[in-house]
Image (cartoon, rainbow, N blue to C red):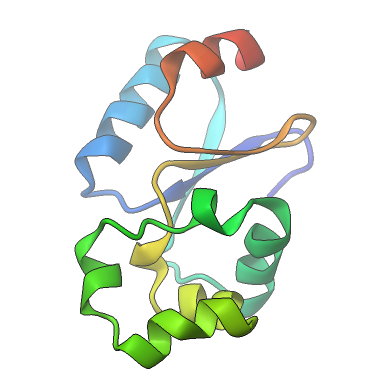
Length: 119
């Protein structure tokens, strides 16, 4: 990602992602979209996400992907295996996930926060 470009991470067919992209477009926010369902989630990028965000913010434990994981896979989060887990199962990452070149990482759909931070 170029250092001066907002990057949006997610899955293109997700309704929340569609709503996010529409909001960004309507507010003329330039961004690069990384569909990690199609492009993947490298171990390095996964580690960057884990280092940048608290696990309770990064992981979507209410989603079907998390619920389908084995108890051992879920427990790997408690033992430092989060980066490997999200690299293998990127759908367990909360959407949307935005990486701003100056402001850092933001997770979840929050128009009021984006308005204040990106305006």
